[in-house]
Image (tube, rainbow, N blue to C red):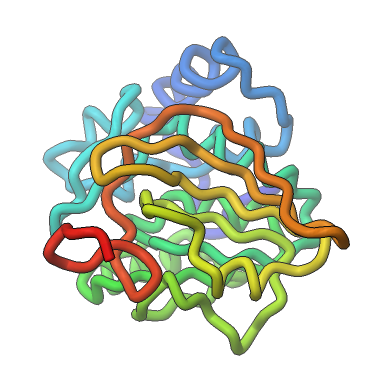
Length: 227
């Protein structure tokens, strides 16, 4: 597991390892592949330069356009729930800063990521390409309708909170696949893991969380009023 375009500088390696040891491992993250990926991906490159000194702290950070880069622990939790082995094709809804996209690129064979806000996607693409990541495809669009061209997906991960699980994302999930998504109100959700089985959907509720709104045809409208 490596990033071809990043050798890892000494200045940020120590706080990155401290982040993994104190925020992830001590709080129950066990998947060795998730732990290794989080040690490798330089989170400071995905935040504004002025906030770089906070990049490895235990909370979300603003990335512009009223969006945030997720708390490191939440990224690790969501990735761990997918139980990725390295051969999977993943759909990510909400590219945002591109940080979670980069982590997923080390955990899966192929990542397809959708971001509705074009300026964010353009910024994240530059960072991802600078790291020598080549197994990621990005596009601007409504993530709640998915990316049907490359379905079915072995796993789907949604980095924004919706009022319910968007049906198109379930339809594009392969049999036996997992979908991880925050579901609930506009200001508070519960992380759900949806497993697609031959007999229907099995849903597990996990960690309480607070994500930005999942905006789109099968999510929240722009004005914040539930459909």
